[in-house]
Length: 270
Image 1 (cartoon, rainbow, N blue to C red):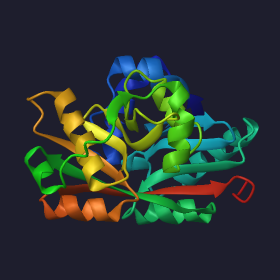
Image 2: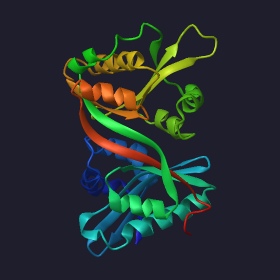
Image 3: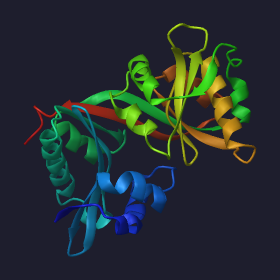
Image 4: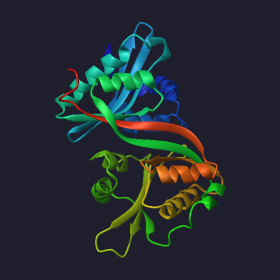
C-alpha cells in the first residue's frame, strides 16, 4: 500500500534515512513535521514500511529528494514500483522532466534510473574539510561580500550556477537551510562569485565558487558562522574537479561521490 507520510512516521523515516549512507543526521522531528512529512510517500506492507520517498514539484520539474528501500524489501522491484508511481504523480502535477541524486557506486540504483531514461547531468564530490586544510587553498579573495540569499536572488543564482529551476527557492523557504552567496556589492546588478547552502551536519550542499580563492572566502565564512567548536565540515563541491583536487591534496577526505540524473517524463516508462 502506498500512502502519504504522517507526522507519526518520523521514527521510521529517521531509521530508514540512515540507509542513505550520508554523514548528515536524520532531520529532527520539528523539521520532519514542518518541511518533509507533507512531501513524503510510504510503501507499507505486512512487514512494515518497505520504502519511502520525498519529492518536490518545481514548476515543470519533479525532483526526487530521497528514495530509500528498506533492507528487507530489496530485490523485489519495490524501487521500480515507487519510481513508476512518482512518475505518474509528477505528470499529474504538470511536470515534463524529473531528476534525483544518486551515489556513483550504487549500481542497482543507477541501472534502475537509467532504464527510466535518466542520464547524468552533474556530479558532486563531498569532502570533509578542516580549518587547517584551508591554508592549502589560495588566499581568500578580497573581492565581494558573503550575504544571505533572498528569494529574489534565487533566479540569478540558479542561472549563474546551472541549478534546477525552483530548487534553490524551495531551499530558501525552508528554515533548516541557510543560503549564503558571495557577491560583488559594487555591481549595479548583483554579480555572484559563489554560493553555499549551510545545512545541519554541518554540510555545505551545494557549494559553488568561481575560483579557489573565492572558495576559501566562503569556507572561512562557514567556519566563522559555526563557531570554534566546529573543527570540520562536509563540502559538496559541484562540477569543480580542480577544487576537489586542491582539497584532496590538502588532506581533505572524500566522504561521498554522487551524480545528479535528469530525464524526460515524456520518455520515461508509464
